[in-house]
Image (cartoon, rainbow, N blue to C red; front, side, top):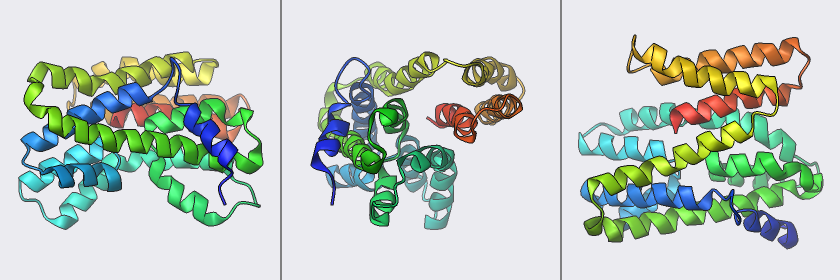
Length: 252
């Protein structure tokens, strides 16, 4: 069973000035409006956040459906866009694991993985007793996931009142929030290398290839940070996290 005290502790962690709920909600308002403009009905729009819950993947799915792509092509495209979730999972879930907890909690709560929830969990997991960290994570996940679903519906219903400029503004709130959080996470040189390197390399590689600029900027900067952390004896989780900060940013 879920430890209710720790679950609500995770839910309450979404409150405060550093809460991801506001920027996350803003992005999903934009998504809901865009899905309506793309021809989705209210149920389909809500279902996309209920079952997919990955903003870039949802946008790719919507665009692919509109151009008549096959189910196989849509699956591959969404999988590639959401690949950022793999290194995030690798870095986070070992921190939540405890032998007394049933495996179903870990399998089901993988669905809650997103940039916003990952950041909150990484910032707070040390404050939680290891036995109940997975319950804390589920609390965070339920909160962010619910926010995404509700705000998708709000965006869909508000679409007629939102112009293009407003949608663009809402859509970039979460990436800006995430970038600010990355700057705040620059407490050691490895993370600083990942963040600053990715920021500098992105525009430079863009001059060579617009399609691959962000991917290679993140890959190169994250790898350099990884090698630096390994050389200086950092824990594996720290330098995996360096990759995650960059991978999460380039795909969001």
